[in-house]
Length: 358
Image (tube, rainbow, N blue to C red; front, side):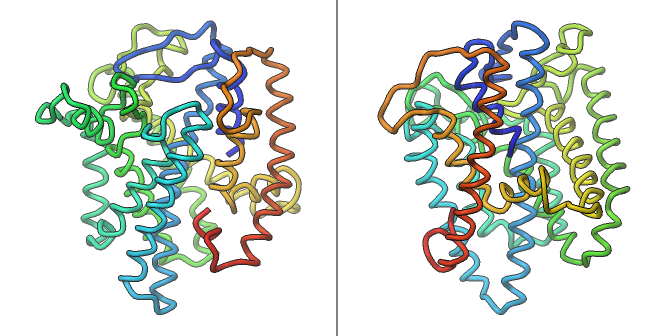
């Protein structure tokens, strides 16, 4: 959450040095130097981790609700409602924060559509769902959408939503297509389904398997980048650190997902280790845990907080020094921490209100 906030605050206030668009429409926007590249690169972990963990949380909550006696129909309707709520929030809260049109298909819209699909998709046998998810992640680069016309607004928008992120046909633009992100969510769902058979003590024993999985994933990333063919939507053009690390995010290549999901495994292993340490619920880890308990509220709030503008007002075309941006980021995190504490209390006091969807 904190890294995501950094990516956005730097994007708001460090233009033109901080930018995204890696792989968008086949592009490779150049960075001024390694510092500006790496301060953007560290945020790549965010989207894959969020979508993977959303799938895991969805599986765990579904299992819990079924064990509490809820019907499959009720759970399906709940997922559809959550998905529709995310689409509304994407259009009228998230898109304006970035200065975009409500039709822009961003990460929250992608979440929303994936939730709606999972309301039915989840009924597949676990091994089938895992297999489909792996096929999507490993082979989405071969997806051919030539059967969809490019000379109509609906054809371009459908391409954007399915697998071809683009800014060409305003306002029918987007950067988070359903494929392959639904494959990542499916992997998360499979992981969550796996965890339902584990109690707390067994989950503690997953540190080593997570480290092994992360190491294998990074080794596979190295092979993919070294071979420089399959799995690279952006080819490696040299042997500098930037050349090796510059991978496609829009859409996410296999190289991108191997690096980021492998890193996620290391972070999860670190979290399991820190959980056993004194004071885990306090200090920096306590603040991060607070963010994680109300992630959507954090996301919606941080965009407007760091943007420092009211709805309907133009974005400021100002570039701050990197050091000033770091201070702004840290001060904003402290403000968000307090806001998240209060929102969590409000949400708990009104469990059946619309707040359950945020």
